[in-house]
Image (cartoon, rainbow, N blue to C red):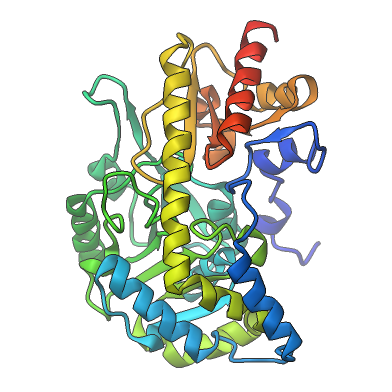
Length: 395
């Protein structure tokens, strides 16, 4: 009998990784499959990390992140979301993915379940599976009849999935891959329900400042929750500052976890790379705020390019995203998104993510979707869309 947990043996490589492995790094492929821009991290961030290295910042530091960085993150929340988060509630364990795992470790015992609003980035539910959780999915409804068309969260369906073994509700807003953004009313209803039932909320707010309605920040659970609510908010430097390869994100958690988080962060990762934290602090400077605005404009331009493309195409459509930088493209007649994404790489030299990667295997609706990242150079994005169109015309 194997001592390895069945939930671990049952893990399989998600569809994004399987597709990207077919052509990762090949220069003739236009890679729209990952959640990252084609911009290199800004020079002022890179230079800050280089200076730190030259100054010898190569030793252990605080496992929850340097105090100066955590204080800068407190200020970031103040100026973007108008919330005052105590520094003791902020931990920087490493990548945002590790922040997700850390939150789940605080909550899940084998047999507990997590209710996840989907479609969602597969690493989220795979992390929950890895810690022993049962997965339950509350899929957003793609409401094509609404005007304007929208993704709709059925709160009754979400709440009905919760039972005595539910430890957490996981929400990503603005959403990956849909761009759906929860309203303040939806967040309040979820928070009220979670309080009554003793359920934690894990809120992925990585794309919080990438919104297209003129707001500084999408609605955040931090704006309505009390400090001691069972709330975990995930955030990252990867997206707004083009820092995907730096693997640095942060977690806002209840103050009761101040001391336990020291132990958890030491056990998991002993903290993020010291010199990378100096780059992160540079990202939180006024110069970093300027770059975030430029990134938002790049995404807005990319969103407009995709919309113009779809306006001239009768087989592909989308529900225009309110935030994040993804197009979740519905292809009429598509029933095997992985197979089509594979052929796009091998035959047409463009990389996309299959819709089937963003939910459970039995969610057939997602198999008619493809995800692209539109935070790209306009000419390159246009060529990628053209290759997708040619593939549909001549598979």
